Length: 159
Image (tube, rainbow, N blue to C red):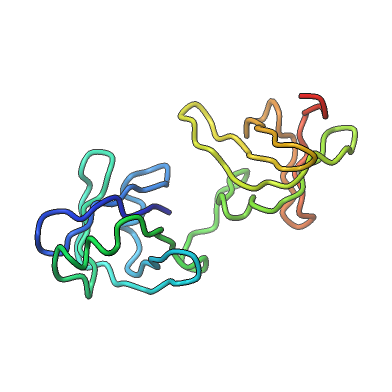
């Protein structure tokens, strides 16, 4: 959902780079999970406000700049059951990671390993026999079937 960009001021405030479509989405959640790799911990959001394209927040237990500095670069997540169900035709990025991608001919292009936000539209990073970048737009992605664990794309093996 975002990452800790830097400490802010001297009283433990953090500058957050949100990864959501709307800058203030994280402020809707009372408990955040912050961490790196396998080390994650829950923090209660005490205060927060929008600051341009970032957030300024104060989390319970982060009392000074030194504590805030130690959190620089940590990723921010929200427990999945705390998130609203996505609208029809919308997906959380985490739902797409690991899905198989096949083309209209049924040829396997690989698995989704990441998603890039380019500004114009999201792009699926697909790793198979080689890396592919497939725009996540209706012109190229015809079906996302979470239950079957696959995406069907209008994409040739030689693209």
